[in-house]
Structure formats: C-alpha cells, structure tokens
Length: 461
Image (tube, helix red, strand yellow):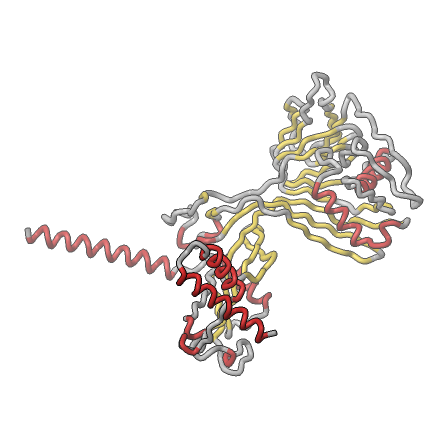
C-alpha cells in the first residue's frame, strides 16, 4: 500500500510539473511576427506615445478571417489623379488558423495542440474571384498560371498560355482567377448620359462606345491582366446548337486567338454620344456590359460605381469632354478582423478626464481605456491594416444608485402628501352611485368627501 501511494504521488507530481511547463511556455511564447508588425504599424499610425499608452489585445485566438473583393481605381480628370479603393462586405467571418498566426516555436507544420474555435485549421487560404465571363474584342495576358485548362468546349492542349486574343463575338468563362486588372490606360468620352432608370446607363454607353471603337481597329483597345486563372472555357449554352463553341488559332508559342464560328450579332447603338439630351436605355437594350458579359446593367455594384463617378465628375459629367482611366483592378482578398485596446494611467491635471465632476460616493477611474477594431488585409506573410475604428467598451459598466442617495437621505415623513383630484373624483362618483342602496354610514362618508372637494374648489375659485 505504501509503495502504491508513493507511486501515485510521483505520477501526480510529474503531471503537475508538465502542465505547469506547458502553461508557462504558452504564456511566455512571443506573438507571431505578423501580429507584432501589425501592432507596431497601428500604434505608429494612431500617433499615441508608446511610453504613455499600453497596448492590449491582438489575440489570434479571437481573430476573425473572411474573404472579399477589393476594387481599386485611378481616374485622371483635368490632369488630377483621383485614387479610389472600395471593398465589398465580407459575407462570412470565421475562426481560421492561418499559418501566419503560428509562432516559430510551433514548427513549420503548425502542430501546437491548439483547438481551433468554431472554425478550421489547415494550410494557406487562397482567395479567388467568382467565375466571370469576358467578351471580345480584347486581349488577355495570363500571369502565374502554368496549367490553365482550355475547354472550347472540349479540352485543348495549347501549352503554357501567356496571351489570349478574343475576337469579336468570342466569349470565355474565367475561373479561379485571383485578380483582373487593366494593363493600359484608356480614354473615355463625356457626357456620361446617366438616365437613372434603374440601370447603369452611363457606364453601359461608355462600354459600348469602347467596343465599337475597338472593332474598327486592327489591335484591341482593351488589354487585361488575369492573375492565376485555373481555366478558360466557352460558356455553356442552353441551346443545342454550336453557338458556344470557339475556334482556336495558334499565333505563336504561348499566344492563341479564340474566335466564334457563329459570330454574335452586334448590338446596335441607340444614338451617338452628344450633349443635346440624355439617352434612355430600355431594360431589353444593352442589359449586359462589355467586356464583362456576366454583368448586366442592373448590377448593384455597377450602379454604385456610376453614382461615384457622377459625384467625382460633377458638372463635367453632363458636358462634352473626356477623362482617363489609369487603373482598374478587382482582386480577391483575405481580411482579418481583430480587437485591441489602449490604456493610459490618469493623473491630476492631464486634462483627459475631469475627476472633480465625479460625485463623492463614486469611485474615480484610474485608467483610461480606448477600444478599437482593426480590419487588415493579408498580403503574403504580412497583415496590412486597412481601417481602424474606435468602438464602445464591450463590457459596459452599469451604475445602480440607492433611492436614499437620489433623494438626499430625506425621510418619507418630510414629504408632502399629493392628492390626485381626478382619481379621487372618480372614486367618489362610483361610491355615490353604489351608496343609494347601501348603509347610511357609507353614504355620509361619501357626501363628506364630496363636500370637502367642492369646498376646496370654491376656495380655489
């Protein structure tokens, strides 16, 4: 028995020492480098002195990860370049164990024994754009895509693609792309001719003008760069014909041309762009925007872009002229949302909080706390802050005050009696009606109350 008792004590002591070592190593382990760099960039950007403010938070266990699409534009108007950056709302936030959240002590495989909370663990999260369609005439430059599947609609071995020329009428579906951007600046005419009929009529008109101008030239005016696509396929057709088939022509190693045997009927222009009036577009005309054949004129983002462009152009939107689009890029991004707070010790005379305004009974604060939420973009092995917003304290303090403190410790005997005449009058009427068949004592009491009220009313008159 004594041997078993000593053995059990030894086992328990070993387990305790191991658990203490694990807990201490976990608490003393330095944060990941990406989080440290993010913290330094935010504190430096906010301009708070590091010797006065202490930073808390940035817990990777509470970080939320989501994917979205970012749009970047550079517009040149009257030799002034105006950059814009727009971000779609993240549809779903979840807990993901990103590789950059792991410290060097956890090893390259990330086997730390940590449990991922309501999320998933795994390798690198690579965001991609949703499938979209592009229509010619235009040229596509393929980047970072060695094994691109080319289906027209049957698979075709075209080698390593670097450039694809889409002839007029050819439409391809792009899948798995990380980003798509404009390679060369383009000039666009004014006026914008926005009709406000539920369609982005101004942008649709500009796109059609650019398409017609590109058809009349030997080389396409529009050149796009697509990063990381996995496949280029002909769109599936609901008809049994061969309208969806594309013809492949090899022009050079890595350079092919795609054309449609049954060329799509060109969309007739409604009218020339002039400043005499606003061109009205019916819902059945120009419903798709070239070169993005998968987007129609009622697209919410497209209408938002037109509203933004109208506000930027101002009066120039309705006058003859032109503007230049220097940059246009849509990219799939991974974003991280985290919470942190700044604390500063309060001192007399610093002017941050008026301590004299606090009541005597209330505990005066000793530390000022500022809570923030940061939205950051994952860029390779770095986390770049995009937006920092101050938020309310998640743990709101509720104060409860005793009634005697509110009333200044006044006893109830010192308060004046307040009688509501309307309420008493209703009771008197009810009692009087019931007093006809009641006893004489009840009726006399009711009459005395009525006389008292009438007397008070006469005196008041």
